Image (tube, rainbow, N blue to C red; front, top):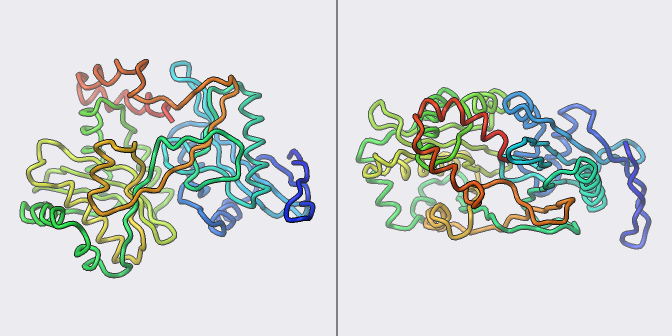
Length: 357
């Protein structure tokens, strides 16, 4: 471990911290994470296994320890590297949140260490995806927001009554159309059937089924997979995580040819109802690009936006961002992807998307 220099705060000197790779147990890491304000599911140690086993990425999980060896901060950092898209260090890639947790001294020291790694390795971009503002002297991007709906814990009926009338009518239409929503890890097959079709429609490579199976195996108690059916046909699906009184739907999709039955509305309401009845106080619709169609859909539920704080550092000093299909240099990709056979997109997609953090 390297040693971070002491700094002064509140009129007293803070002891030096040791910064380096975390070598403790997953229990030690998770206990510390859950003790910190602003922690998220994506800070938990299990994501290291998911990133390594399902996606094949190197994980640089860092920690700050005080003079007694006690944890004072942690930073889950993942390397995503390819000749096509570039070299990135991200906390946490493919997900909405990450970034350092701990005391202000530790947060600053961990971010400084990550910057040193980014310089040493000449990465294209270091990105620390924080949900909340951090005491960091790094450029910050607000290009994404998360959208949340306040729930009444234990009272889904109260939540339903507060939903705008137009949405309540669409939920009822889904129910009258025969949309039925099922939950459980056994829904991964139906979920991926819908998800992969929808992503091809959008022209975007999709993660493979293996990723979601690894997530379900790693987080059996707090990962939730849901699939909406019309008869035996899966027509809408979602997956997300419950933690600390909150549920986030991280992935969602629906088949456009069944729009008249409103399966997407049935799916979202079933997840909101489940979260409220489970005692959650917040339903998180996940991240969006402000003012996009997806963002507008989420806002219609009576939800509110929370800005995200994605801290960035580029060793070259040039503006950099993680790859996006909206970038002009990659605009050809979606046009081609939509024309490929579904079976081919399912085979190639996981190999490509794992390189786009």
